[in-house]
Structure formats: C-alpha cells, structure tokens
Amino acid sequence: MNVSLSSSAAPLTPSAAPQRAAIPGSYGWPVIGPLADRLQYFWLQGPKNFFAKRMEKYGSTVFRTNVPPAFPFFAGVNPNVVAVLDVKSFRHLFDMELVEKSNVLVGDFMPSVNYTGGFRVCAYLDTAESKHSQIKDFAIDIIRRSSSTWVSSMATTLDDMWDSLESQLAAAGDGGSVNYIFPLQEFLFAFLSLNILGANASAFPEIKKSGHIMLDKWLAVQLLPTISINVVQPLEEIFLHSFSYPFWLVKSDYEKLASFVETGAGEAVRRAQTEFKLTKEEAIHNLIFMLGFNAFGGFSLFFLSLLGNLGEQEPSVHEELRREVREKLSNNVLSFETVKKMDLVNSFVYETLRLDPPVPQQFARARKDFDLGSHNAVYEIKKGELLCGFQPLVMRDPKIFENPEDFVYNRFSKVKGGDELLEYLFWSNGPQTGTPGPSASNKQCVARDAVPQTAAVFLAYLFQRYDEISISSGSITALKKAK
Ligand code: HEM
Image (cartoon, rainbow, N blue to C red):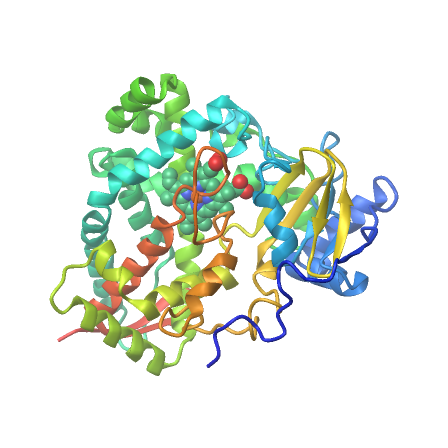
C-alpha cells in the first residue's frame, strides 16, 4: 500500500501564484437564511453533508454559510461564518497572529459562564489574555506531573472495567452481549480524576457512582444548541435547538463536582494558587472543565470510535495488532515507552483520530485583515470574520490523504513512511508533530501527545489480555482470554 502523500497532492505552497477569488456563498436573508441553514444542518442534511454539499455546489473548500444556533432565541448570536475545509485553509486557525480565540470554542454562541462557576475557563480565553498563559501552563504541568502514574493507574482501572465486563458477558450466556458505554465512562472518570485532579473518586461514594452521569448531563445541557442528534425531528428542532437551557437544571450536580474537586484535588488547587497565581475558585472551575469537558468529554467520544473501528476490522487486522503488542511487550511492562514502539497500534489510533476527530469543529476570529490561501485560491478575510473548520472533511482532504474515505489501519505506519502524514493530523487544534507543540502562545490541546499514547495503551492492554475480541454496535459480543 502506498502511504505517501497522495500522488495528486498539490504542494501546500504551490509554485504558481494562486488566483485571488471572492469567497463564494452567501448568508441569505436575515432570519430566513440562518433558519434555513439551521434546518439543513441539523435535520435535512446533517453536519457532514451540510458542509460537503456546499463545497460541491461552490466548487470551493472555502465559502460563506451560516451555522447554528440561530433563531428564535439566539438574538445575540451571529451565525455567519467562512467555512475552511481543506488542510491548507484550515491551518490558518492555528496562526495566533492572524486569528484570535476569545469565547469561540463552539462558535459565536458561548454557553453561559454559570456552567463554569462564573469564569471564562481556559478554552474560552485568547492567547493575548495573561490568564490564558497562567491556566495553560498549569494544565501543561498537570500532564507532565501525571505522566509517571498515568499508565499504571490506567492499567489498574482497566482491570476493574474488563473484569466486570467479562462477568456480565458470562452472565448473559451464549449469544449474549454487554454494552460498554457506561462502564467505559466509569473507567474514564475514575482514571482521569486520579491523573488530572490527583483525586481518588472511590473516597466519594456518590461521585464514584454517578460522577460520569453528572458530567454527561452538564455537557449535554450546555452544548445542546450546537449538537446534532437527529432522531426525533422536528421535535429536536423545536425543543432542543431553539433556545439555550438554564444552568439550574444541573446546578446541584455541578456543586457536588466542585466540592469533590475542592476536597479531593486539594494539592492541585494549592499548586494552582502558589505556582500559577490563580485564585482558588479559578483553579477549581478550570479543573472541573479540564476533567469534564476536555478530558472526559474528549475521551468518551474518542474511545467509542476506537472500539467501534476495532469492531469493524477483519480478524486478520486484530491478529496483526495482537502480534505486534505481544512481541513488544514480551520483556517489558506496559508503559508510554513500550507503546511508542508499536507502529501499527499507533497508526490505528491516528487513523481513528483522522476519520472521527472527537471535536469536529474549530472556530477562530480574524484578528486583522489577511489573505487566506486554500489549495486552489487566495481569499480576502476581514478583521472580525469568524472562520469555521469542520475536521471530518478537512481530514478527508484528497490532496493529502489517499483513499481519504477508507479506514486504512496502517496509513500512519512509520515503517512505511506514513508518519510524514502526522503533520496534517489536526484533531488537537494543531499538527500532531513538530514544535512548539502545545504552549501558552497557542491554543493546541495540552494532551496532544498524551491522548494518542493513552489510546495506544488502551489497545495494547486489550490485545495483551485477550486472544479474541468481538464488538458490535456499542456492545462486546465475545471475549476469549489470553492463555
Ligand atoms: C480525547 C481527548 C481530547 C480531545 C479530543 C481534546 C481536544 C481538544 C481540542 C480540539 C482543543 C482545542 C479547542 C479549540 O480551541 O478549538 C483542546 C484544547 C484543550 N485541551 Fe484537549 N482534548 C482531549 C483531552 C484533553 C486532556 C486529557 C486534557 C488535560 C487536561 C486537555 C486539556 C485541554 C486544554 C486545557 C485545552 C485548552 C487549550 C488552550 O486554551 O490553549 N485535553 N482539546
């Protein structure tokens, strides 16, 4: 298989000067345009088709459109964006000289700060704000410190999860299956609390039992106006996408989580105050957001895709991955160092992040007027315009990725030179390789390296433990333990 850049690839800096062009597309009539686009986005087309159809219609990866939420109760929200849907145009979102990221995590719409203790937490701050540097440095420090316990605590927590899934599967009998969504989230909550907060959830019975559900509800209620579910239309448009939900629906859960962080993560909170000059309240609410939104929310989506993709692969792919894991682990314990050597496992993880980026959309606002280049043309962007990148399409850019729609598990294999493609893997709001990596002067996810490594550990653990794993529609259908 050829894993080099697609042979049709246009260089990212073409030799011939690209043509200037006006940005195609329009925002339509006030009220009617945004409403029509909202209905197409959520209901008639779905987000991926919404962007794909317009890309086709305009013959351009850059165009103007509206994105939800819109009408009737989002009066202050401006739905107008410039979509950027190829690798080259999307990369402008990382250039902090050209764009700013104040309050645009999920678009022009921002959930009420009541959901975050009254604070604009790190992900809503622009790099020009000094508070961003303080919190980002704190987050980077958390990831660095926890790296020594990350894998061992993960393995212990995974033991509990798989022991429990195995006994449930045995109890279900022949032909039975066991859903893994909530067990996976319980595992994530326990393991991420230990590593991000330094807090043992087992010491807090109500949190241990329901912490993951509390976070699910908190995430859902604040993000509803922007999430497509598309199962109960038109009720969804009328009741879920027409107004923002009030914080009081999840207030009591949020207060319990805040008290868990204050007590259980005392050391991290103190460090935030002494070393990073945050107030106690800023530390607590940023920690809840990092745990709940960034880490738990991100991993919940990512690990569901990872297991889903594993379920869809041929037994021969499982066999190849299993062989690699067991060979590399023969004289070693599971660690970040050992999984780094698992070329195919890492490629499988990266391919999942390419096709199913857990955070599909990124936004950024032009800091000044500038020229934005796509593969085909150069467009004029005006200060204040909002750019919207939709990663599921950007990561299928045919000029970069050969057979872009296919899940090619060894696409990123180092042995085959596929690691060159990591420069174009953007799930973390920045490239997967290269310097500077996540820092206070950019908006890249602090866990750019920890996330894929954690997924590689997760897969390696599975292939070490089982000779056979069958997965179908969110359920485990068969497990055969390694002899
Ligand atoms: C699968 C898991 C994860 C995914 C998919 C993910 C994804 C992302 C993305 C896309 C962004 C940029 C958002 C934007 O500005 O548009 C981001 C930012 C961030 N992530 Fe992650 N993340 C994950 C795990 C984590 C973990 C474990 C942490 C640990 C604390 C973390 C902390 C952060 C922080 C603090 C930011 C804000 C960066 C800034 O404001 O400069 N993330 N993440």
